[in-house]
Image 1 (cartoon, one colour):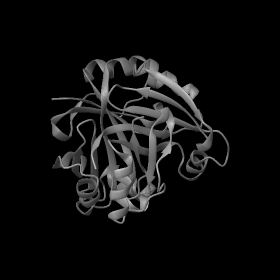
Image 2 (cartoon, helix red, strand yellow):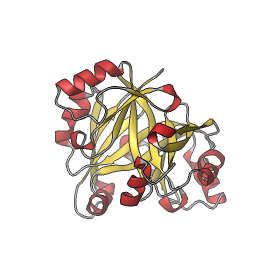
Image 3 (cartoon, chains in turn yellow, green):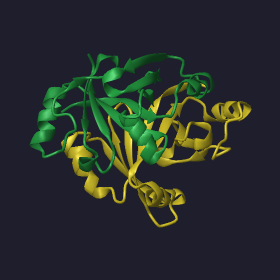
Length: 134
Length: 134
């Protein structure tokens, strides 16, 4: 497969609105967009550095993966997302290599990207997302 | 300050050599370098996607910040590093804004970058590094 870069880093926070002061005003990452992804139970503020985005994630409800993550580990860096040219080929290669996937097929994530998560059991304990630009 | 991108994501692992199979062979991130940074008590394998690096970190001894992190939280994403044009100006601006720093002055990190860490108390609970290219 062809990994083309770090697409974003996902950061779990109890609430994200008050964090814009740090990312937008103090660090000066002014390219900000916001999105609600109901199927994943999250809302997100995305700060684009131009070379990789910071995706702040807030749970919409207690069943959200972000709520469960924060209950277990506290706020922190939740996942890393790598940009990939062709996610269908990538997932086929990962399966062939015996890598455990959370998503066996790509689904639509934030900003319309086709995404899939690799299970931390196959990555050294971290959550890795792959994303193909729409 | 001018943040120019995600320089790398730092990942704490108990040992890093066996992880090259996932990052280098399976994901195909073949641009790999290795370094020992004695002052920080770590050795690191750096996988460069071309747009952001993955920095796997292994403790050299039990007093290493990486050993303490793993003892407390287990292997996982340890920090995010943002590239900045001028780290001296950036640190001055952060101090002016009342942001708590771990490093009040830049020091030399992996690959000769000038680096400084911001305290998680000022970032929403995550460890943020700034780095200026040498």
